[in-house]
Image 1 (spheres, rainbow, N blue to C red):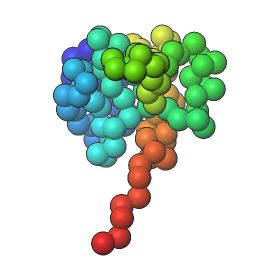
Image 2: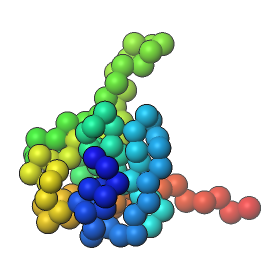
Image 3: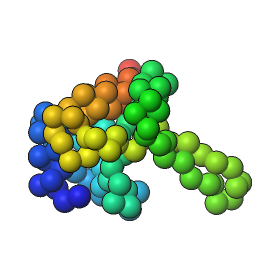
Image 4: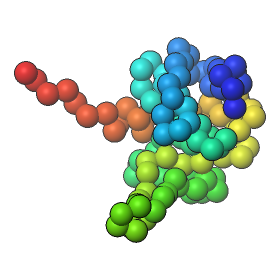
Length: 112
């Protein structure tokens, strides 16, 4: 997905910005990362509060096998629902869900 397609898909989340990350592209709204494009797939941020919603929609959690320990590692991102991949209207509630999960995961700044 190119940047123009992502801007169209996530128009409800403006302002958007993009950065290279994990060999893919991170997608930010208001400076908060809420989605990734990895290996051509779109991943949305999630947490314990919304994982059941992703699972019910048939989304898969991003996992990988740790190269040293051999253990399966689960990342806090899920594949985007198929019905939302090309439809900004269908993507809007999922993008909002991902953004809210990203806000919840933000660590408070330490007082200095």
